[in-house]
Length: 251
Image 1 (cartoon, rainbow, N blue to C red):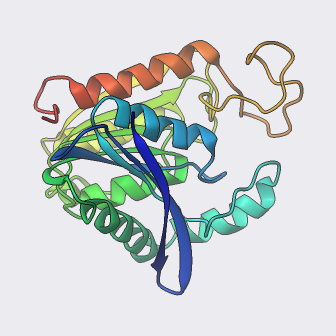
Image 2 (image 1 turned 90 degrees about the horizontal axis):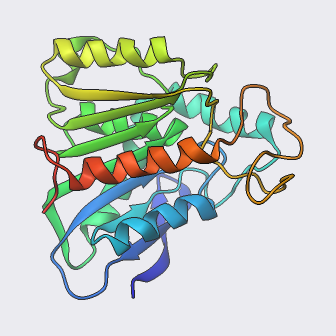
């Protein structure tokens, strides 16, 4: 049985509340840093950390909202997320501090690090990768996209999985493939999954639905919607990357 607990830590003058999921047994374990989307560190992200721990990965879900979530508050969420995404130093501070918390955990293997991110959390993960965090595998789902040049990826040696929905208006397939081409020009190993008919945050099961975990009763944000089939497919692709070959496998 895995062990889980919240971890309180500081980034600058703000207190964050992350979530650690530890595999059964004793380390050392490969580690995964997980970045939540703009809504916040919710039960879905905690569940992804639990699932990774059950597969043998010591996982820490970072926090960048000071312990808050923003369900049903899109304007408040954007007011917090957009300034952060315009501040690379802030993103790096958030990401590096969370990674330090993870690597300080007894049993963490600092030579076996992967990262998974959603939305703004994926942008933090990508900034860490560009800064040379030492990831072996990186999976990002509808990431906030950095405007970068190929030379900026010189220290980002990892295998990358880039995912988005075909109908995502915030991270379009064209934008995602532009990032992939930038990586390719830097000699980076990457692949992309485009999920047909999926919108932004297609993995996020609605809190209220018309059926058993299917379509939401009401969508209040255009371009955002749950897609049960692709949610499962995307998560399986993440697990396949972390556990799979092509130089991305963690021991």
